[in-house]
Image 1 (cartoon, rainbow, N blue to C red):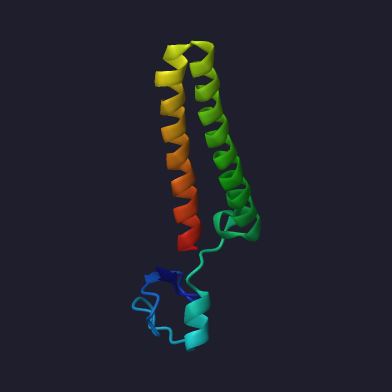
Image 2: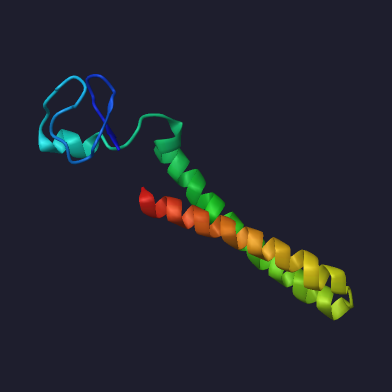
Length: 104
């Protein structure tokens, strides 16, 4: 969704006229209005998302490593239950982070 620069109403990204206030703007302004203002869409948020993605990947690797070490140490509950649960949850987080970055 894009937002009208005049009335801040939601509108389709490809529209050249706002359906609420009928404000017409050039095609380049329509392309630029598809990002919302605020921290969540700021460059700092993009950096935080990238750092969080790397941290989630490292945490996934650590959980996998923990499961392997637990298996060799004979701690079967941690190796066969706890570590796989953490690996799956962390992989899900990595997938969400990567998909959010694709949408941007």
